[in-house]
Length: 409
Image (cartoon, rainbow, N blue to C red):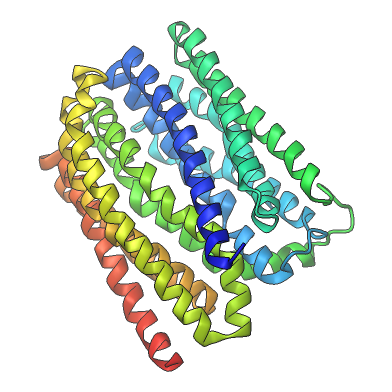
């Protein structure tokens, strides 16, 4: 199979799997939104959003650094496991500090309990991300997809059975689904690759060296999540949980196609690393072609989002107001896809430290604009700020990438 076909196949497999898991996620969202209503669904949205910050924190770009450093050697896999276990405990500490600092302006005492009830999903996400290194190197994303579908299906069934008992039981059902996903991912990964899960021989020097190399990309990913989702907490504090529920439903539909760019990067990244080392001119040609395809696909998703938006009210009349935010958000797909490509381009050329400054600036601007505009314009302001914020990120990354591109000619 040619390189082009391998990349296309693995991208399609991931996106097809994302479609299946997102369909399960859609059903999960419908059940939660329908039975909880906009206000209580907004509570769940806050809990999930807080966890999602730490999903990317525990990710920290470690997979990309592992592949860049060790290529196809899985003997150092325990570095991923140990590092992510450490990050999970750091995440719990940071969540505790956040809850203390906000002093119950975002989460009520009862909601704080639910936050910690949902927190094991952070660890499960980290472990699943680690196992994806094996699937990525062996080009077997179909197994990762299978694990996600099994766990997602179980979580959905349990949710349907227990949603009437309240949000606590709904959270337990979803956490169980995450846990089963990780279990099956581990079993599948062991079937196709030989790797130790834990190892006593790992030293603090090993972990520190690994973290130091991953820190720029990890900080960028974390800031990227913060800048794009800080609006949820500002909405919650200023406009209440119902506004969060309306906006979050629109964002759930919006973020589904964003995964296409991520899956494309996952499929192509190991090949980019190899080709860049062997032939820089060939890399430039392949990167340019891949980015063009990515950019063109964004317009298809934009059109699909505009068509789907008016039908969100079918879930429940509470979400009639979700139509406008989704119509605004989908306009940013072309920029988001190009930003993804530029971010990986800079990482491959070891300019990832620039990404920290770019996303840090975007986070500060996003938070400031939301504080200023949300009191008057609510989630409509948050939607437009997301669009313009990503456009700013794109322009800043392009200004850094262009000199590198010109030097390669």
